Amino acid sequence: MSEIVIYQTPDNQTQVEVQFEGETFWLNRYQLALLFDRDIKTIGKHINNVFSEGELQQSSVVAKFATTADDGKVYQVEHYNLDVIFSVGYRVKTKH
Image (cartoon, rainbow, N blue to C red; front, side, top):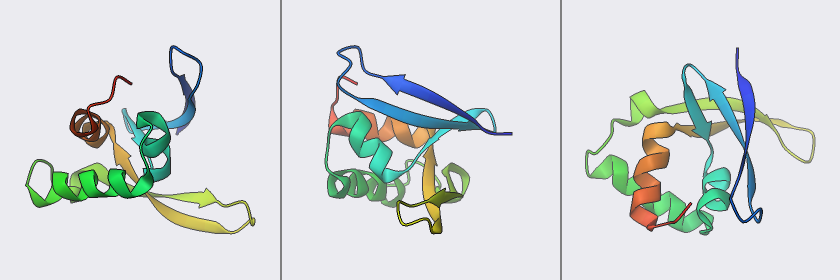
């Protein structure tokens, strides 16, 4: 069973809904961009580097979850586990 946890930065400027499932947290690229205050392209570049440099194996840290968009359609969206979240956070040199 998955659980949604709300993360809010200490300055109360950013709030991100985080999915908790399988004993880890999962975020999609958009959520990572909000969390780390970077654009989605920058987050995507760092995620790609994590995999291309062999830091993490994509098959063990990426999962697709059904996500309902604003238009009501359901899409399978890639989400990244806590290992990727830490790796990207380190790479973007964020205080969050």
